[in-house]
Image (cartoon, rainbow, N blue to C red; front, side, top):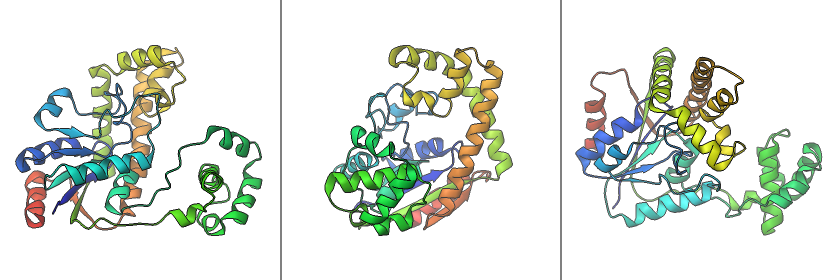
Length: 296
């Protein structure tokens, strides 16, 4: 039977480096759980494993989507579950910081297979959130209880699923956990040390050519590409537009990354069955290796 080892945690906690070492010891492969590394050409700003690293250990679920396409959670889950079932390797490593991607696998989230409906969303959005929420309470009271009255995104999605399928989203959700064993290891650090690591990594991204990457992507796909409004890319885009200096852009990336890491840590603290390890421990690799040996 397949066994799955999850290496998760906030950004800049060293997940990729640790996973690379573990994968080589275990003679296994890495499945990525990162919502931006799925996109081709978005490399430096997403801290994607380098070509050399990918040659050392096979990586899956990286570069599987064009930048102008939309990767849905349902599609990611489908691809990941298919790989876990078909690779015939045990244990497998699932590595990343996108909590929802990880939850979709380890808890077997039931996700409505409904693609975004731009025209329907546009019509609904024009009605305003107050009216939309009243509509949701009428067609799916259970979903409305779980969605905040001001949450436009989730309200729209619930109505979109209902009007597309004729079935309330609350009846299409739930969990179907996999039957294989799972070990979840979460890398963590005190906030002060993590802030230092984030600052260092941000400067390294600039040194590695993040500005040139953003310039190239802006020219190829246009500055309005949604991915270029995400962390690391948006700030450099501002610099290229002349709105801020490179130093200011670097500081903003570090600031926004710290804020993002805080949200990630909150998410993982709410997730069940995680075994925490401190990345400041000089024997981190051996500590994790011991946990894996006990699991395997």
